[in-house]
Image (cartoon, rainbow, N blue to C red):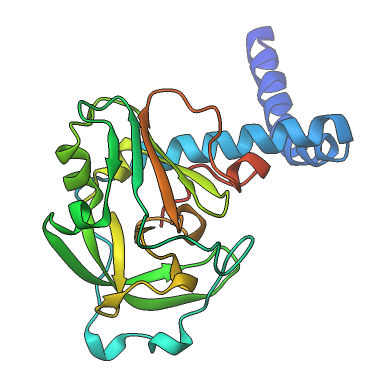
Length: 239
């Protein structure tokens, strides 16, 4: 018998057997406490990288007819801390810093002077529920343009009155459906829903849509990613 054929056959068998054993090896690795967290972190990082690479900036989330809206009183109020952090609505400003030509304090009137967009979109919570709401505000991209933000920067980072914080990759920030939202159901935001200003991002899961915004920074470096992300949740979580 040709020894080369024997070697090839032996190698083929070894490869097949190794492929059969890989799932068991992976399960075994997850059973080792020291390996579990690094493996989970690596897997989540790879998933976020793939999701970011597949993101289509011009692809729109589904919009809905008025007849399909969830009634406002049935729209869940979901906070990580408190329903109302006590924002002084009359004195509120958004503090803008980072890679922008016009940093400073921006009033709600300045934001409302930009073109308004209203859209009926689905809000999806990581807890498993979803509703269809009506959101109004200005495109985040229009606001970034008005403050002279560097479009080549990697992130938009926000902080909130309830100490929550979040970040968006720039492609998501510039998406035409990403809003600085100051209205729901054609009425000013209620305190429980994030007054005076929140993010509405129908291409992302709910925890990316921070409420009670107080600070916005355009940056290439993140000291913190997001409240839930820094506890192991997905950085990207696109829908």
